[in-house]
Length: 513
Image 1 (tube, rainbow, N blue to C red):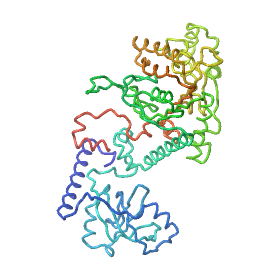
Image 2: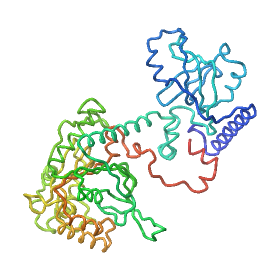
Image 3: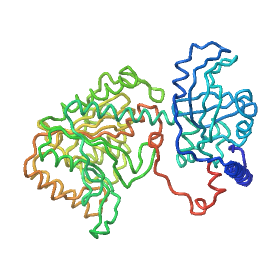
C-alpha cells in the first residue's frame, strides 16, 4: 500500500491484497506445508556474514555453509534474489534453479513481502559485489497476512507510526536502533550506581496515597479490599522509607503515572530514575550526577560532547547558577528585592508572566523562571537554591533563609533532573505536608496528600540524605537526537480509534497508509 491511495481505493486494494495472501496461505496448507513453524536452527546472523566475508572478492564462491533466517523485505527477478532482514541487518538470498528443486522454486511464488523464512546455503559474492547466500534449501517460518507499505519511505505518517509501532519498527530500522540505545542508557545507569554500592529495590505501583510530587494521579479500585488506590506519581516516599530502614544507597528505575497532558516532552506513563544516598547533600549530589552523565556520554559517543538537534552539547562541565542569578541574567529583575507577594506579582505582570495557580511568593518567582529563563538554558546547567514554598520535601538552605537546598538540571531548555538535600526533620515535614493537604482539600488536584505512615517512618530517624529524580525518557531523547518523547517510548499513550475503526478490517488497514 502507498500513501497516494484515496480512502476508498485503499480499502479496496488493502482488502484485495490481504485476500490474496490468505489464498496463498491456504494453498500452502493444501500442499502439506505448515505456514507457522515451531523453530529454526540458525547458525549465523546477517552482520556476522557481512563482517566475516567483507574481503571476499566479487564473483567468488565459497563452500562455507550457513543457515540464516529473517523477514523477506524485497525480491527481484521473480524471486531469484531475495533481501532477507534479521535483527542485525540484511543478507541477500540467491535462489536459482540450479541449486533448488523445482517444487521449492514454485513455493517461492507463494511468498510475500513480510513473510519470515529460513534458508541454508553457501556464501558467495555476486559480480555486482553483493554478498549472498546461494540457497540450497529454504522453509517458510511465518506467513504475513497484512501487506506492508511499498517502500522504506512509505510509512511516514506520524500518528500511524506511533499507533502501529510494530510496523514502524519493520519499515524504519532506525527506530529499533533508538530502543537499543535506550537499553544501553539504562544499563549504564545501573552499572554506574551498582558499582557505587547502590541497590535497586522495587516499590509499589499501587499506593494508598500518591505522594512525592505535585501531580494529578490516576485512580483505580481494588475489588478485594474495596478501596481506591492510586498509580504512583513518584517512588520517593517509599525509597526514603528504605533509607529509614537501614539501606544507605537505594534507587529504582521504574514506571511513573501522572494524569496530565501529552506533548513532545510529556507522556502520562514514563520512566524515572530515583536515587537516595545517605550522608550526602545536594552539593555532592551535583558532583555524582555530573559524573554519571559525563560517563554516559563517553560510553555512547566516546566524547564529552555530542550533537542534539543541530546543537553541540558539552557534558565536560555543568554550569551552576542560583535561580535568582538566572532570572537576573535574563530579565534584569532581582527577585531578592521582591519582599512581598504583591511585589512579586507586580514584577511578574510587568514581564507578562501568567500567574495562574501561584498562591505564594515562591510560586510567583518560579513562574517567572519557567516563563523567561528555562528555555534559554541550552548547555547543561544546574539551577540551584529554590524557594521553600515550592519544595515541600527539601531541607531548608543552611545559609539562605526562605530557600532550600535544591537543584534542577536543565539541558536544551528542558528539565532533566530534580535533586536536593532531603528534609529529615519529621515535625517540619508534617507541617509542610499538612499545608499541602489543605491546598488539596481546597481544590488543588496536584498538591501532595498527608502520608501519615511516611511521617511515622521519619520519626524513627532518617540520616542526612541526598536524593534525585531523572527522567529517563528525556535523557534518552538527548542521547538519540529524538525531537519527541514519543520517539523514545516504544508504545506511547494514544487516543484509541473509534470502535468502528477497530472492528473494521478495511479501516484498520487504511491506518497503515
